[in-house]
Image (cartoon, rainbow, N blue to C red; front, side, top):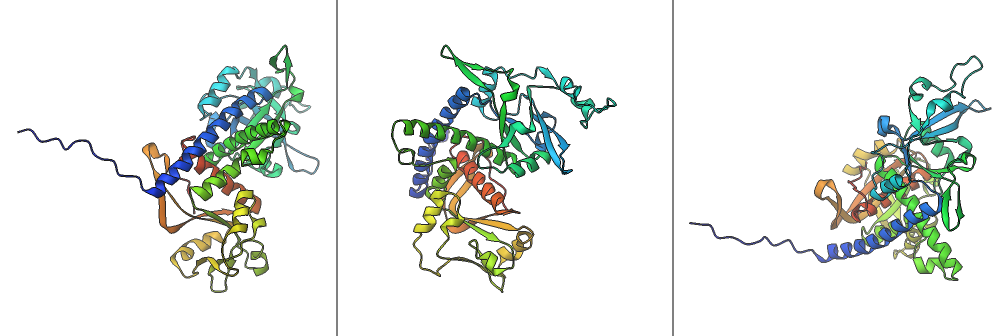
Length: 402
């Protein structure tokens, strides 16, 4: 006797909170997709090549090979970057298509450059010249042509590049317009230039590349609005990609970013948000200092936070399980950040990061760095990465936190 069919299984109804989260994410997806498409057009119009990637994580497929020298102060100095194109480095389909359209090829033997970089006795100046001479490249830029991208630090950029930590290079090719046709001047190497972004992990580097391109698009749209006599801030609502991530932080994650110093000096702790009591408790009290938060929308949220002066916004007992396990690691770094949130993630198909409503308990993500600027950068890129992931613009997985 045949079994009766139970019919199709009913999907679990989406609760109201998750529905609101998904509504905001859908709106963000539309805005970010539009900016992504504008950025591709801006890059083409301004002669900006798709990014080329460097870092030890790429192994032999790294596209950025940096040559270093010694300056007059006997300190390492970036002499040049040898830039090449590898077939599997670019994760974004549109940027990969742009590489193909521009016909980017490694047609310049590196040996031709290395033959010029020799000692008076004919010995090569560059370490590993014998191995490098077997390779070819797209272009070579001198150190003076290479700068950190806006929002990134020049010396930190050198440190990342020198240590082969994840970084990406945006090359600007000189262009001109002739008979309404855009011309790339590939032979004008003297006027090439490049801007570099960097991050602590390949995941955050992908966020940094997106941030750079989204800001290109927002800047271009701002210029058009100014020419039309309009107010860009009023029309666009945000100034940069970090502020879009702030919208995500507040509207989707119900989050709050806090900053602290591991220094035992109380007066130094007062510069930021988190105070450590003599018994080891970590406490954050209202009012929060708007000037501590570098992202304008989040700084404004701090200023408007409804809390009485002296009211505790966070209190972690020093003898509690959280600090007992984490504080020895936290105090080994100069700065730490805490991201309080109620929005929670889940792992979707193929590990894809997805939003999953709100937790009844406050969730905490910890960040550790040696400088405040690095802490701001790490938390900024993490916020952008999670926004892009939940909007399914990158194949994001959950970030690893302390």
